[in-house]
Image 1: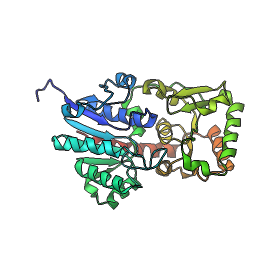
Image 2: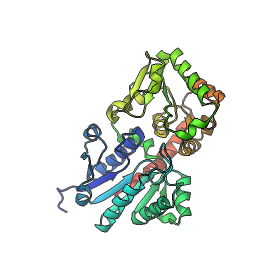
Image 3: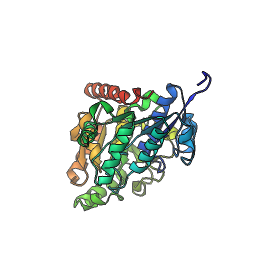
Image 4: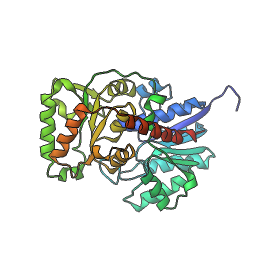
Length: 345
């Protein structure tokens, strides 16, 4: 390849639904590729995100794999089939097609910053194994994912154990925090059918509505998608933050004083910006994160949470501060997150 011609890379991930966390990890992977000399295309990430990143945007995957030298699959629980609102849904098939197409045409294939397993379907387990065998390297974000892959026969020298690349938001993305001294609140859970069985859920929901209504000036109601928070009706005077693009969303998120959320990557990104975070979580992967940061007491499964758990968390969010222990842990985890990008050449 002539010196004046850049290598080309495609980033494949669950970007078509424009979920904040998935888009964020895709953006960080794209920036890593730019730094090592690639011309980058991120299908379905959104025109505004790609313009902000300086990457190429396409609405479909048509033709992008043929023109690429390297294919990187990354972000989210895409090596699992239990991560969405309806467990059993999976991105594994598109991941497998991308990996197989890349390998058959002699391209480099990497998978990184993913959650792997558990699997509800035998087909999903086979696809995860096949993708792992095809890829040059697989980077997973927690020990459980590493163990799940080992359990289906993926050897340790193929898998790199690190931590979620969303921890590197400030390392790779160019934005400045807009301070607001508010508690960020996100709890949008209607689509999670298993959560609705909790007999305490109605009391928690009513208490949260009452809290935001009584504290409009000190909260920011957050949605990790393009729609307003369902709590906005209870607090019409409260500030709101909807995700419509990384360049607008990240500065306001980074200006919070604390975060209360059910969403994994809102918690991770807040933590990466040194913001204390608390979660009534909807998926086990969020519990794993709080164990990683040494704050397991700040996360409770929403399937079993009580009104007391909510009251304890919201009270703590009002006064929590960033500590030396938090800083030491963050530095260690960011170092591990970099490991999931450094093998991409």
